[in-house]
Amino acid sequence: MPLCKPKVQEPCPVYAESILRKIVIDSDIILDHLARPAEKGNGSTPSVLRLAMSQLFCYTTVFNAIELFSLCASAKERQAVENVMQAMKILGLNGKSAKNVGAYLRVSRGRNLHDLEALVAGVCLESRLPLLTGRPRRYRGIRRLYLVAPEEIVSAHKKGNV
Image 1 (cartoon, rainbow, N blue to C red):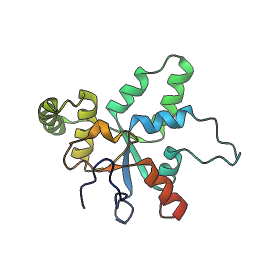
Image 2 (cartoon, one colour):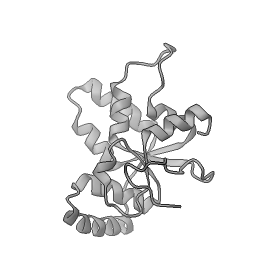
Image 3 (tube, rainbow, N blue to C red):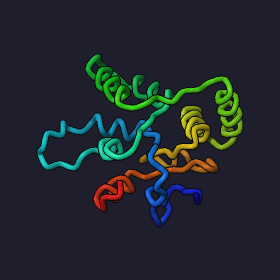
């Protein structure tokens, strides 16, 4: 599979690969979903998270969960985040992957990459899963990290490819 870089002209060929049915969801996609008004048949387009979850097995990382819970200002917001977290598998670290992700974190510090993004990227790389994010610049320069833009999910949904 070719490496996808942020701001590519052509969409990543994620959905061209029939074996790809799993994806990691970044915090921004979840926040966008939570900030939308409730979708109750009002003709609005479903959130990117809903579109992804309708056809793909979605994961997030423990680091995304930590980021999301840190942004909660009320019990209602915490409950909303918890509800979303229960709808997907949360990827964490074991001893072996912690060693590999830790080594990656050490290398990433010289690239002006924030620790949280480096940890999310490390879990994605360790799990060999692409990352659905609307913030590709946060992950710029991470070799072998496969990024999927929200527009690709929407486009694939409209074409019926997801």
